Image (tube, rainbow, N blue to C red; front, side):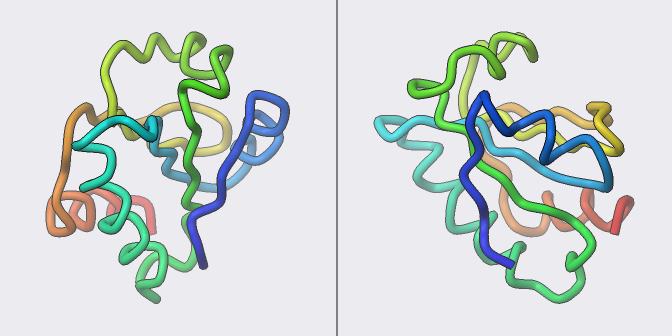
Amino acid sequence: MAVEALTDANFEEKTKTGVSITDFWATWCGPCKMQSPVLDALAEDGSFSKIDFYKVDVDENKETPGNFGIRAIPTLVVMKDGQAVERLTGFHNKEQLSEILHKYA
């Protein structure tokens, strides 16, 4: 599964059931550019086929990051059935994210 871009308009609908991880990012953010390929690799990993991978551009979508109080990027939010269960700020490597996501896979 590829990482899907979400907007303020479809975020709630897409994350209300199941487990997902959302990367709050911006095009100008250096650490965000490092985080993106890590999420892409995990999204393609068969171990996480039950987890949805999403991205929200904080410059184009202000409401959703505001609702989560996002003040730094990248911020990753793991959600289960519409509720945030983990929040990670800053770059995280594949091993770190894999360990966290295995709790929900």
